[in-house]
Length: 213
Image: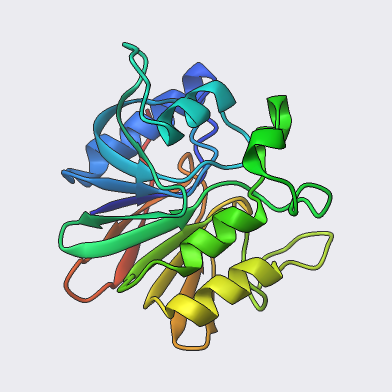
């Protein structure tokens, strides 16, 4: 199973790197951790919305109403769970903004649609039997290099409730690993630098350099 970090595939070079990772993996299904930004994909890809997306596409996928030649094989995880290669894979789309968290999703417009709200978190916490959880925000304790304190209490809350074996994190463009209770947490390098392969039987994750496009 292919695993990808942020792609930011709005430019030709980033799209070429994204597709180079797909080709190199030779997988038949993929997981992706947000900031995908290109949705016509070569194989079924289960992804979360990040803080940089085409939010018209993301909202349409939330409501199952996309009919476009520019969207193919893109399955949005938005406080939902899917069975992928025998694994229960769930995800929370969006990033955290304190000023928007207590609002309803219907109150978010334009670029503010990038955020998750309390209802999204509560719906995620009601999922069950989750093996892999994907988030664009990190739980506390993940040792990534930023100019601010990394860690979102709402991701902490989800992981404490669901106790997945593995949590995949986007956003930081850096590989890092930690543990949060019984959950192994991995921050993913961006797709133009690396791709990963996940063994569904053992949940071991192997990292490879993305080849030149």
